Amino acid sequence: MRVILKWTGGLLAIFIVLLVGARFADGPLAIIAGGPFTSGTLVTGPEPDWSFVADLSEVEFQLVDPPRSRTTWILEHDGKAYIPSGYMTTWWGRIWKRWPIEVEKDDRAILRIGDKLWERRLVRIEEGPMIAPLLAQLSRKYAGGNEIPTEAVKSGYLWLFELAPRQS
Image 1 (cartoon, rainbow, N blue to C red):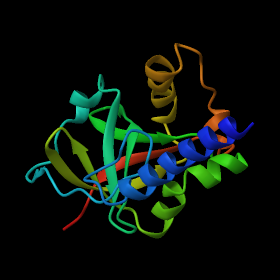
Image 2: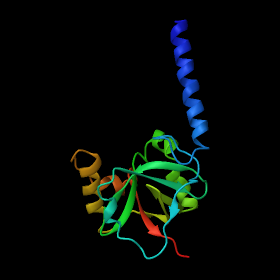
Image 3: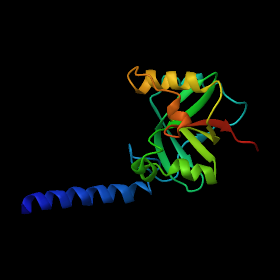
Image 4: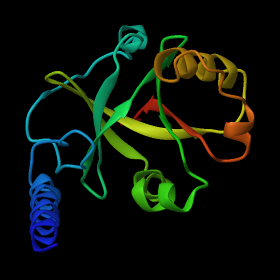
């Protein structure tokens, strides 16, 4: 029994060190939120065609306030980029995924792909013609082809955010 308690305590200590240490890292550590980005080149100029993200599995983004970064899935539709956030109606989803709630207060974000940074706004999409194609892409990329019903968005279980340009 003592051995089990020691191993459990040791694993818990490692997790806490990783969790606290990640807050000072240049970006997230896998599923653990990280600190603000300290590397990368800011991309400026005309709005890009985001179709290049269609086949990417994950990207990193950072909220400006609070300045924490995360790894997330990414979707593309009609040349625009989107980030999904599921489990929003579950008690553990609301605890684990604080960033969508934080976006309601300050929607400014920075997207990092490779060594490039884009200043964006996270604009929640709750209805409209882009919902069906986004759910189809989400199903294809991340749910093994299992259909995700539009009710997931309507009920608030799944939140979708457009990575919209920031107005200067």
